[in-house]
Amino acid sequence: MDKNLSGEDNDDIDWDTEDELEIQEIQDTVFSSCTDLRTTGQHVVCCDVEASSSSVPFRSKFIQQFVVMGFPEESIAKAIEQNGENSDLVLDSLLTFKALDDSPEEQPSVSPPLEPSISSDDSASEYNKIVLDNVYEDDSWSSDSDNYINTVKQCYLNDEGSSLSEKEKMLLFLGNMGYPAEEASIAMDRCGPKASLPELVDFICAAQMSRAEDPYLLEDVKPNLKDILNDCGGYKKRKMYNELCKRKKQREISVEEPIRLPKPMIGFGIPTESVPRMVQRILPEKIIGPPYFYYENVALAPKGVWDTIKRHLYEIEPEFVDSKYFSATARKRGYLHNLPIENRFPLFPLPPRTIHEALPLSKRWWPSWDTRSKLNCLQTAIGSARLTDKIRKAVEKYDGEPPMEIQKYVLYHCKKWNLVWVGRNKVAPLEPDEVEMLLGFPKNHTRGGGISRTDRYKSLGNSFQVDTVAYHLSVLRDLFPNGINVLSLFSGIGGAEVALYRLGVPLNNVVSVEKSEVNRNIVRSWWEQTNQRGNLIHFDDVQLLSRDRLKKLIESVGGFDLVIGGSPCNNLAGSNRVSRDGLEGKESSLFFDYVRILDDVKSIMSRHR
Image (tube, rainbow, N blue to C red):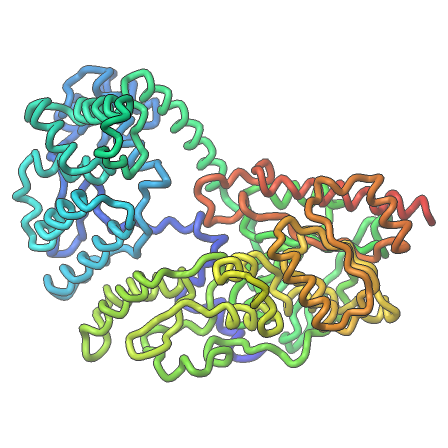
């Protein structure tokens, strides 16, 4: 193994992929309403309404009834201080707090944690300014809310937060919930200075509903920018509580311990090993030989997912591989197949294995404190121009190396969004053609034909890493010297087809099943540009590929030699914090169509023989 690869697993930097985001709990540094935001050092920013659990008997029956519901004691104490021991009002306040904590729309962009070792108040204030700016990146805020929030932010940045009045704190809280500042102010004037948060929210909601019923007032109504508490009244809030409980249960499923992955993640071997690993595996006799199958999905799926996949695919052990051993970018995936594992070979020429090899022009501008040698898993989205501009402003203020807090802030976002250095103090997201190169696709593979940059990133982010897959498929070249018939399910932008073509395996017939018209056009264009002599047949939905249709296809092309594909990982990936429902999810449940189609193909072909 070369030097660059041999030390990777002992690297101090944790190269998290999109699949690991659910596992890694990064503490937000942004302040949340009525909650302390502190560092353990000298600099303290505070935004809390004094509340202590000591104000009520420890674990009293009144508190215990809310603890059993799953509310934290700190929130219960705050709710009791605001409303007294009134069960309905306390529950309303707790639901409000929980809605803010749980609502995905309200979660600010995650930032790296503030460290206790802050060298000076100036550097700490600068870092807090960056973090606070991130909280309010959403362009959908109204101008009134912006003006008020910016004023309050300045108070905090000038260490004046502790002097805010109760009214100002409540206005800030309501502003964070998305209510326009003027509406919040009117509600506080009408309801009185001692009004609780639920009373203020009910007042604002009632006013909005009243205006909504008057068509002549709609022009003057400012939209409720954060649709968190649109349902007003105690009954609807309790209805919302049931939904929160359901969402909590889903999250408990999603954060279950994932499968224990091998380390290093090299599957049954990689081409850079100096001494090949001795791997033995025993396949059930009924699945040895063609038709071969090859299935791919994210390695760090929720616990139990790969056990289910194995159970439906003949109890074969998955081959877990990280594409960082084949390229300059990480991509942790599991591959389950019945292909031979001897006499594999990689694609030549070997692709670049480090960032500087892949992007040599970036080396000139790369700061010494950014020690990345590999890129993170390439996603379907990229960092925004606003983010890269904030990073530039944060770094360029310092002649030499920026403080450690700034470095951590910058590195966090560089890793998360795969930002690279393109100039002095300038970072930028990868260009689509750079992503194509890193994933092993030919230049301009996804370019042209009316395809937007957004669609290019999305299509590439969901694709195979061609060099990794080609290494596994390389055994087919000697098995099918006269060409191969492929059933490509969820074929995306044709990663499997490109891999086989680059390996020198003739493509006689390819039945490609892909829902996205954009992706189908990309595959069709590549097929024509590479002068393929075989037949390309497109279908747009695996669920419509019935047994009768498969029978006709098999009779037409003479059977399939390989059934390949990776069903959607939408409900499996760690970056999905909303609907990570495993194989029961709407998208990822399509895995069972892969199993159904594979079984039908094997059954039909065995009868033909």
